[in-house]
Length: 279
Image (cartoon, rainbow, N blue to C red; front, top):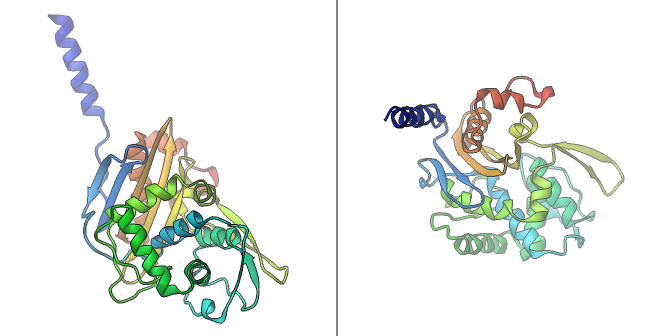
């Protein structure tokens, strides 16, 4: 009897020590197990909203699934008509799909997104139709895309849950998986000049358990982040939308840590030394 009572108390103590779900400032969020798809945390996950440049992950998925990434893309004048974040590609210059895809996911240039969309579907409008069709195939029912880069457009919206479907599929695509984990990448322009691209994902740059994926920001969307992580055989993906500049990084990091079963001391031990505090 004493042994049984002690065992019951032990189980209760263990349950009490389980980490509580983090308090997330973002207006919408979802955390799920990448392998099983099981949702571990959710907040307004079905609320329609702007998702900014995180929808470039869907753009990248369509490009990667089309294959032939060594094919060259010649830049046109229409590709350059994008603001505000650009690589300032020049009409007539050419790059491989892989070079453009890497730049898209690491640094998020809007002119690159337009070039890839046009190359893939013939026009930005035709590519948007392919984005919407692919989302339906993934099971998303609450999204409508107009641009390949996430810049504001009438009628464009998605949800954290729909974007989670994109994130899970993209996470297991080998080409995308390879790129989104890059902290930096060197882009070589057609004239021979090079530019080091620093990944916009601060969680990736700050914690070794983070291995991707895509950032986003517009005035309408707020600060957004799709972040993936892996540790001790677990793999999870967190999406936060409508956050503030100061909270988007810790919110995503805390969700990943919660999903991976990491406490504060373990998080600190897995912090990149040069990252210092969460900035």
